[in-house]
Every structure is written in structure tokens, then in C-alpha cells.
Figure 1: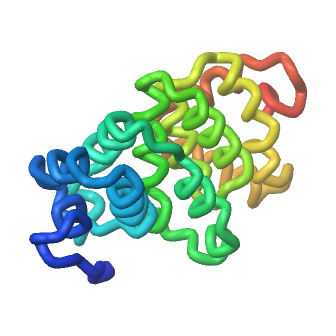
Figure 2: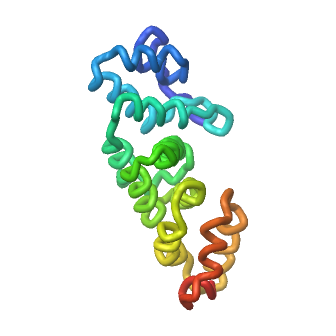
Figure 3: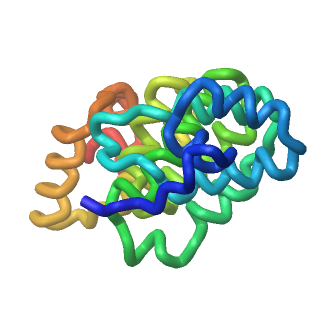
Length: 188
């Protein structure tokens, strides 16, 4: 567990970090660049003390929509070289969940970023679970080779693949891939 820095409660950043409703009101009243900077800070530097019991992804996603905010900072965060050295879910989980909500609201840029991250990112399983709820079958099928390619065709790789399937929250992609006629996909 980590102890995040929380800004004073009277600041816009502090209100957004705490996930309070008046944070949204203050963000909408603030200059847009200031509000987006505070929002981006919250999403890429998860302010929650325990990410497993505090949910803020929908709160932040709706604020992105209200502010017509871009996802460039999230993309930069997910593409950071630290992604492959600091693989803890808490580093990217909030950003991936926010992208999932944005995708469910029809943001194609969020859906595309989730797909790219599922194919190349360290926390690919979380991204795949977000996509399982929001992507169409064609989008999920396109990820079969990059995801399955993470698991070598060895005894250890097969065991790791079985564990990944077992530990997934959403089985939809795995079921689609099991029915895929391609030897490199369905047979695995």
C-alpha cells in the first residue's frame, strides 16, 4: 500500500482527489486548462488510499466528458517506460478504468487506446477486461495474436496462459478466441 499525496481540501486538485461532488462544480467553474490539469493529475497519479475499495473512475470519466477533455495525458502515462518496470495494478488501473468508462460513452479514442494497451502494455489483463465489457467481437478478435503471443508454446507458457484465463474477470475474449479457427489462436 502507498500513501498518496493529497492536496489541501480547499483546492481544486484536493477536491477532485477526494472524489467529492463539489469538485465537479469547482472544475466546471474553473478555467478549462486548470481543471483538465487537475483531472489528469488525479487519473495518472491515483489519489486513492486503497484502489480496491474506492471507486472514482466513473466520476473522473464523466468529468472528462463534461470538460471535453482529451486523453493525451493518459496515453503518455500508459506509454511511459515505467510501465514495463512498475507493473503494479495501482499504477495504471485507474487510468484503464477511466478509459473503459469513456469507451462506454462512445469515445472511440479511448477504445483505440485500450486496444493498443491490451496488445502492448504491462497491465494488459486489466485493459482486456475493460474491453470485454465494451468492445465488439471484431475488436476483441484482433487482440488474440498479441495477447496469446505473450505466452510461449511451452509447458510454462501454457500454465501461465491457463492462469490468465482463470484469473480474468471477463471471459468473453477468451471464449471468442477458443472458437477461432486459426491454429495459433483457437488451438491454444
